[in-house]
Image 1 (tube, rainbow, N blue to C red):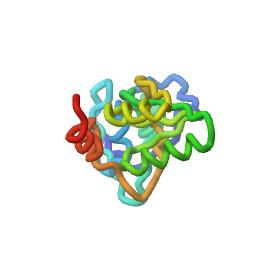
Image 2: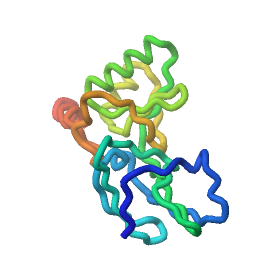
Image 3: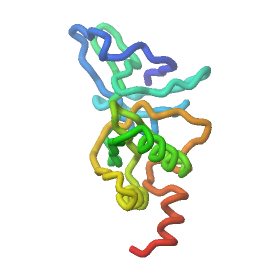
Length: 168
């Protein structure tokens, strides 16, 4: 097993030369974990343990390399709600409402991304924000002092409450 406790750089700003690229494929919600044990795409066992400050892994982060191999993070695409606010007021309202539901929020270029939840999607449609559902790599999550209630299962406290109060 290869034990890793720091990020060595990012493939965007590093020339790997003749090294073979081996990817550690992660879901978006795994990028902030302090401890994990996974296998790379080529079968290498990786142990990740961060003792000090918690770095959030980004797509392309280099975790390990030798003269022949480079292991980098690859964040898998996930179902996402994609919004393109038309004004600063729309941006503020959308971000406030999503944040008020304690959902993770991602800003990429001029788009707001949120892991897909049907109740939120329907609410955004009803408010006229024209959300789209797309498969996207969710990276660069906005940091707040509140963590999402649930990761990866597609259900949050908000969606459970809405399911109880709305008809299918």
